[in-house]
Every structure is written in C-alpha cells, then in structure tokens.
Length: 214
Image 1: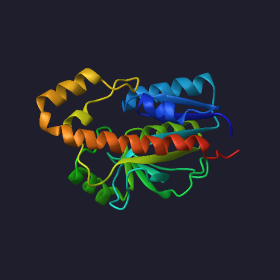
Image 2: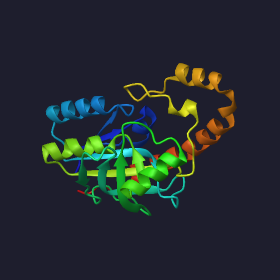
Image 3: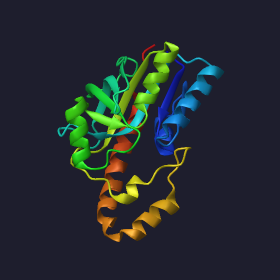
Image 4: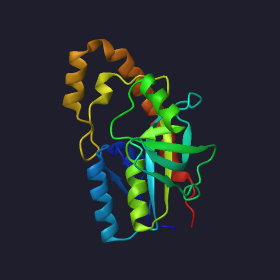
C-alpha cells in the first residue's frame, strides 16, 4: 500500500508525519473544509487508504502524553455514525487499540472528557477522525486512525489553547496572544501544555518509521 491520503489538524502535525507516498491534508479541525479537501484529493487520484493521524486528547485516565492510540472504530460525538477501522494499515508499536471519538469542538476540560469517555467508551478524542471515517465509507476505502496523546484526561486546556486554528491548520498567533492578554493567569498552564505538546510531537514524528501495510 503506497498511496495514503492522510488528514490531521495542524500544519505542524502534517509536517511531522510526511513521508513518501503520503498526501497529508491539514484543515485545522474544520470538518466541512476537511471533507471538501478529502473529496477533491480522492477525485484527483484515488488512494489505497485514508489515515487520520496526529495528536488527540486522552479520555481514558490511564493514557499519558506521548502514548499512541490505534483506532478499532470511530464514533461521532453527536452520535451520527460508527465506523470500523482497519488497524493493520499503519503498524504502530506499543500502541493501545480502542475506540476514538470525533467531535466538532475541542473537549477542553476534565469534565467534558470524562463525559465523552462515559458516553462512548472511547480512549481518545480528536476533530478529524469521524470526517475521515465517513468519507472513507462513502468511497469504499479502508481507513485507519493513529493518534498520539497530546493532553491527558486530567488536563484542562487554557483559553489560549482553545483558539480555533486557521482552515489551513495554521496557529492564529494574534488570536492566541489576544486570548493570553485577556487572561494572563493562564500562562503557566499554557507553558506546561506547550511542553507536553513538544513531547507528543516528538512521538508523532517517530510515526514516519512505522511500517505501512503493503
């Protein structure tokens, strides 16, 4: 399997996972933008498989920053769908296998994460996997979900970390700084999260060495 169409949220995630034979889309967690980009890419050249890859929020309290989750299935947070993954497409060592839930808005607090975990049984949450799953199903394509935990179930995202990304997956720095100026007390939490994100991104970059099923 050499032609993979992958989707993630951040430009930085797309750069971290880029490898020969992969087309990687970064759409900032904007579901409609991602769906349109996937449809256009499939129309241009039908891939062998789709992969949702990048960072995710932990829902299972046992998961730590840098842990890898391979999806067994994906559910939508609004209960509109359930899709089975092909976990053998990307062979991730030492990964937890289980359900991933896709949502339209970030799960930003421990209470929100606990509620999602209780309602769905998912190990992790992201904003792309449900879109990838639905598009893959519509085209009869296999798909996989491979996610690295960037924030744990116990982590509350500070307001500056909740600023929506650009539609190209870029960080809107001016908006982040404005959010920080409004709530300067969040700086320690933001710095801690930045450190955890660096650790998670290093683990994500290692995915370029993981085998892809041929």
